[in-house]
Image (cartoon, rainbow, N blue to C red; front, side, top):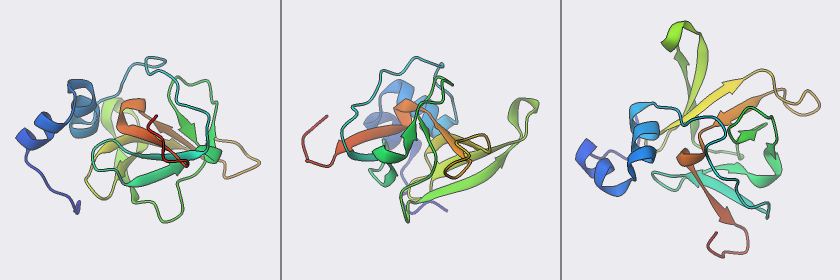
Length: 135
């Protein structure tokens, strides 16, 4: 169970419509529709609750149309669930703090690191630079 529980009305009030649709209704943003993130050192956080999920140094270009990471941040609250929607078997990843749908993880990432590709919806995450400036 997520540790942060809010009503559907509360989430709708706090999130823009696309972030709500993706994170709370298990949607997917269109490939290549999210603008790029800064390349500066920093952390990617959950768009719903601010939990720290991924580090910039683990982001890579997979050419799949969504931000991709080869691993989560150490001790990140990222949990996995079997997803059989759309006639496929995939592994969904979500924020274990608030239950936000983040994307999916696949075993086709860089072999020289983890071999994993966390394929994450850009609207599900926010970038927090290490220097504390607002991105």
